[in-house]
Length: 322
Image 1 (cartoon, rainbow, N blue to C red):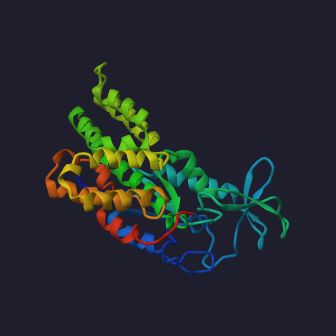
Image 2: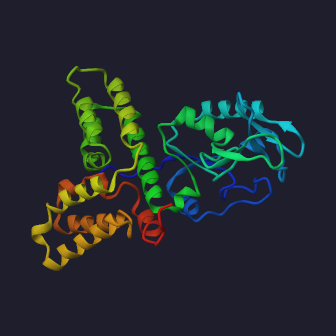
Image 3: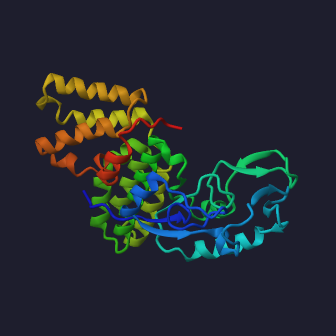
């Protein structure tokens, strides 16, 4: 299996990097802190970047019929154009980024669940949408993992996010100077992962790297990356993940004791019922792969899609899906 690459991740700066929130504090988030050593962080506070101080009067999103406006009620300032200009300039400057981790429900950074008020009246009702900066990021980088720290408290959402993040980083390393051999090897190592996520896409990607038309390698890599991003866009269904684990289990089951086989089936059933994360039955199979030296399975990224330290620390708690 290819070594884990450090993903390049855009973080909201208030997530433990600087005291830049509207109230002058920083947010210490357990998931963010544990992730920091494993990534290359790029930090941004869009509100500070457009000239708002720390601390500062809060801002909010307003549905102005023909647009979503960014408004500061206390001062009456319309910050829509300033935020759009900064966002476009900043996002255009990013080079080879792998994902975003932004502030939950922030009117600038929140990818979702942000209050968008129906008018500028103090007691106006609201709907849910994306923050002004996050909306531009989603438009430009919608094929990448973009999440907030609030949603990552769910082990299912977190595992999907980390899988996408580290997979895109691994492919970026291949695509720097792609060769057909490296593309074929990447696809082979990710076969089980793609089988779980999207079998139709897996077969399409296999045809891409087969390159029957002898297309230029750079064109093949670009086609493959686009299909890879689409394949990983949605988390695998539990049934698909279970099928992959059962397939892998078949390689080692005849070498296990009846008690070990029963233990695996119990773990698989617990995952099926959402009582444990996917990492629980996966780690069991991975331990047997290492124990019996099954090289074909040992090369499969599925069994360690992101650093094992994150699995052990983050995913073994009793955190329920949101």
